[in-house]
Image (cartoon, rainbow, N blue to C red; front, top):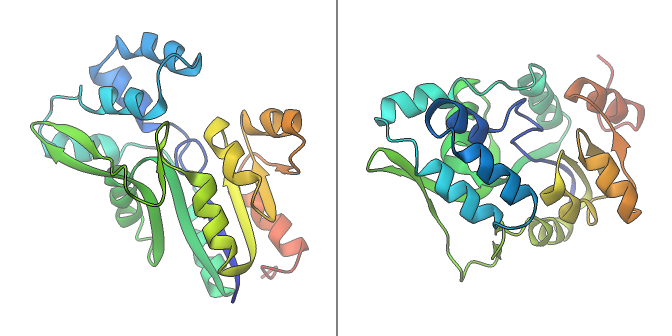
Amino acid sequence: MKKWAFVSDFDGTISKKDFYWIVIEKYFPEGADMVKQWKGGEIKDIDFLSTVFSSIHQNESQIIEDVLEIPIDEHVPEFIKKVQDHGGDFYVLSAGTDYYINYILDHYNIKNVTVLSNKGYYEDRNIHLHIDPEHRYHSDRYGIDKATVLEELKQQYETIHFAGDSEPDSHPAVHADVTFAKAALPEILSSKGVPHITVENFKEIEKELQRTGFLTND
């Protein structure tokens, strides 16, 4: 069994802005009303994202340009390198799509990261999701079942650290050894009685990992 891994959500955790908001603001303003329906539970997460991402209607070069506008926590590239240098494996676990996540990782020269997310591809001037109902990680609501992923990783590592920011992250948080929660997630986890550490950024996460000995203070 390996010693430890760090698993992080992408949108709103590594990134400072969800990609769907960039799409809505630039190409699909009517999607703002859909956000309310989605947050209210009227629309499944995967249906909401599929609709938004198939409403871009741009050439792929423009879409990639938009993807690279996603702002991320500036400390993330250095943080990931430190995790890896200290014997940890790094995973990005997202209910969005690997289409834009992989471009961001490449853009910041982030290497040796495993991305577990819904498969995405460009076709007919839009981003589409390939959802496989037979996949072992399949979720009817999210596309990918983050809790199942964490349960599986727990069989491979002595310690799993997890970071997230919103409701979908409350499910895998139950299975993590340590959860770092930001934005809306602390309140959700508190209501469920799930232990967590409230943070605002990856510098705060790094300090906690230094305190617990997973990273050195260098």
